[in-house]
Length: 157
Image 1 (cartoon, rainbow, N blue to C red):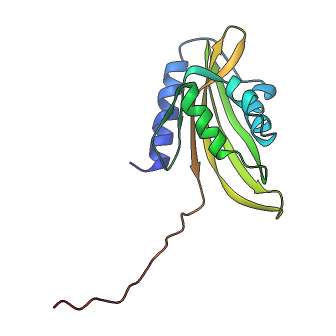
Image 2: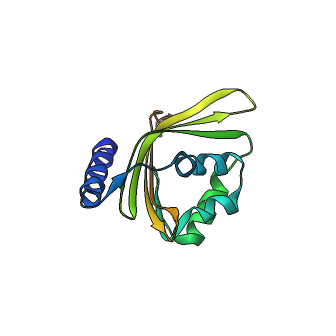
C-alpha cells in the first residue's frame, strides 16, 4: 500500500472515531510543542510529550513503541546541525482524542539549506489536562537516493 493511501486511511479512521463527540481544534502551543522541543534538542521535553503506550511509525523502518524505544529513536535522530519546523494544516479534536495533519521541513542550519520536507500525522490523546502524542507518522517528499555499484563480470571456469 502506498504511503499516501496509508496516511489517508489512517486519517479517515481517526476522523470516524473522533466524529462521535464534541469538537474543536488543538491549541497552537500543543501543535508547536513537538517541533520546538526537537529543534532545541531537548530530549526530556520531547519524551514528556508522549503517552506511555505511544508509537512512532517511521517511513523507512519498523514501528517504535514505548518510552525506551522512543528515547533511543529520538537520540539517534537529534542533530545540532538541523532545525525542524512543522506547519499544522488541520487539527480535529473529539473528546479525549485529536488528529493533527501538516507539513514538516528539516533544515541544515550550518549550510542554510532545507534538506528534507514532507507530511506528518499526529494522533494526540488527552491525559489529565495535557495533550500527549499517541501516534506519530511521517512521510518524506524527498526521493530516496539509489546507489548502484557495477562490478566487472567474473569468468566462470
